[in-house]
Length: 315
Ligand SMILES: NC(=O)c1ccc[n+]([C@@H]2O[C@H](COP(=O)([O-])OP(=O)(O)OC[C@H]3O[C@@H](n4cnc5c(N)ncnc54)[C@H](OP(=O)(O)O)[C@@H]3O)[C@@H](O)[C@H]2O)c1
Image 1 (cartoon, protein in one colour):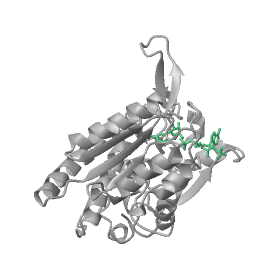
Image 2: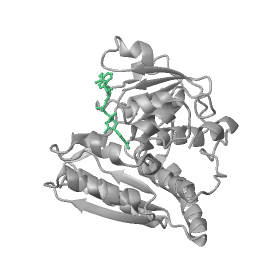
Image 3: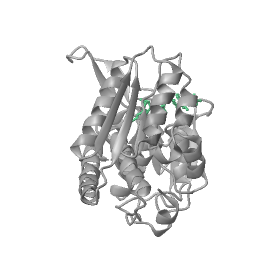
């Protein structure tokens, strides 16, 4: 019986981080230290651990991290003032506002306040619009991470039928948009499924590449996957597990154990898409530093594929 090749997001992320560390070292010789300004408001433990991981990742590749933590009681004006300070700080090239913000704050107003040139999360409407029309833009980190996994694993999207399950603004929609751009990282025929889709399996079974970002544990079963398909599982779901000290374990949106007997390649959870998200945040911040320093970008956006078209249209 053939078992799918595991697409190792941890290894791909480590490779990209090593490339970025070398790039940061070169930039430092020219007097530029890429810097990430972090805004964290409140006490949400998941947000705290996520932000700590991002800050640590910055330091590991030699970047500067300007950490700012505000209490849960912070006012809209205080948060906006902090964003404005970071907008105007020449040592800060990218700004990360950790979401969700406490409920009394106006999240969209805060995201709009980030200068698009420093919007390394790719959530500002200016970046979203530029991405959709194929202009240079910061691509959102998780979708960009998925494209890097595909490119660096030799999976061609050009001409493939990609089915994306999920249409959120941070994963499904930008991913679908990127995949249909006319360049070597895209050029796919894209179908997007959601809760309004009738007979989901009839669509997922047509996929050469199936990407699932629904937040529903193990919803994609083997009968929903075409023999030999490439399966990318973006989902991260906590399932209670009394045998673990933490009391839970992480599972994806794909029933990994059965689908891996049918797919040709598959990402695990954890260790697939997850490690790529922070990595692409670092990537965007290094890119922002290059741009704000006025450096000519000689790197292709996707080092694994170096597409001439992509160089014209991507970040
Ligand atoms: N690995 C990472 O770094 C990373 C990053 C971001 C997110 N994630 C994970 O990815 C998953 C999705 O995140 P998200 O922020 O995109 O979630 P989200 O905002 O909740 O969106 C989920 C999407 O999936 C669709 N959906 C839900 N159940 C479905 C079903 N039964 N059939 C078809 N479509 C269904 C929803 O459709 P409707 O629009 O119709 O409601 C929605 O578009 C989550 O598990 C999240 O934790 C991982």
